[in-house]
Structure formats: C-alpha cells, structure tokens
Length: 241
Image (tube, rainbow, N blue to C red; front, side, top):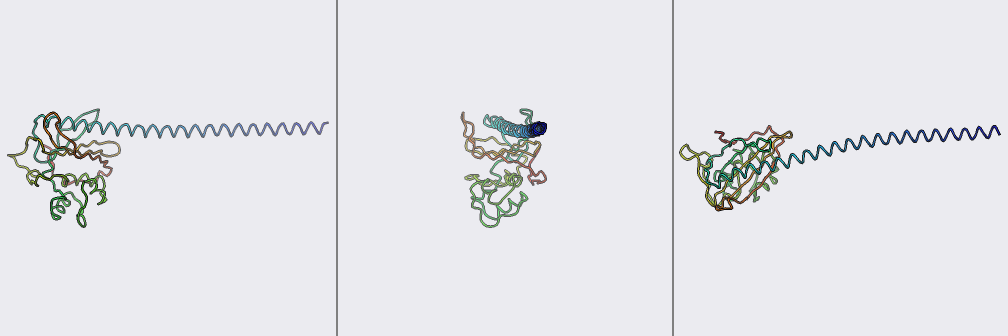
C-alpha cells in the first residue's frame, strides 16, 4: 500500500510540474504576442501617419496651384521668365511655387537633336544616346533611367507639347521691358510646387492650358515627384525677385 501511495504521489507531482511548465509557456507566449502586437500597431500607426501626411501634402499643393491659377484666369499677368513666387502658407505647410512658360523650353518632338542635347546639358544631365522616342517627360525619364531629382531638373529645360508655339529664347531669358504678360485662351503655363518634409522634398509639376470663360484652364500634365537626394542641384536660372 505504501509503495502504491508513493507512485500516486509521484504522478501528482509530475502533473503539477507539467501544469506549471504549461502555465509558464502560456504566459511567455502572451508576452511575446503582446510585444508583437505593440510593434505591429506602432508600425501601422506610423505608416498611416505617413500616408495621411502625404495625402494632405498633395492636397495642399494642388490647392496652392488652383489659387494661383485663379488669379491668372482672372487676368493677372505672369512672368515671362521662370520665376519663384512668394511662398504660400496653407494647412500649416509652406509651399514654394515656381512658374514658367513652355515657350522657353525645348521640345524633343519638334526640335533638333543638337538643341535637345544642349537643353540636357543646361539641366546638368548627360546627353541621351540615340533619338528620343518618348512622347512625355515621364516616359522619357523612365527610358533614360532618370532619378526624381534629375527629372525635376530636366523639366525646367525640356517639355513635350510646346507645339504649335515656337521656341522663344525670350521666355527663358526675358528682358526688363517685357517681364510679364497676360495669358489668353490657348496659352500654356507650367507650375512647380514643392514642399519640404522629413523624408525630403515633395514636388508637383502641372501643365495647364488656359481656355478662358468660366472654365479657366484645363490640366494637360500632372507629375508628382519625391526628391530624396537633396544634393542634386539644378542649374535653373530661376528668378526669385
């Protein structure tokens, strides 16, 4: 009887040890799961925050562009030469606005290879090898494997869709007697909006064609760019006065 009681007691202790080990394992699993959930939640909230900021950045730049275009449509004259406008404060963001006329940019669909090569050099970029078969700057940037910063620089010197307007050197250089002009139906205008953030600079390029009347303008190009490499400087020749 005594030997049997010892066996029962040993089994009981074994079960107690197993239950205790199971409890410890369960507790450890809960702690691990809680940590993983906390990390995942932090990552999700951070990602959601970045997405929300990016959306608000884009909306703010679009609103700044619309505000400026509203003035142009109402008859306000625009600079003939590329010009950095006064910063626009919107939604707690300082948005830089730069305007330029497509008339002062080279067009690969109509201009010569030598003229396009010169424009690339002015933008600080290597001359393309062979003919350019692209029909948009976004496609050209992809085919030439340009970074966002390089495309941003190129857009100040090269464009598609300038035609039927001829190239006008005065739209790049300007003169003291002819620095501003009003835009009428059919005229085009390029806008570059930029916003500096934690991850670099968000850039939005727009091309609009004025149509007059109540419609004001129509959008011909919409190109968002995210500049991460701030060391790439553009040879822009843009006025800030």
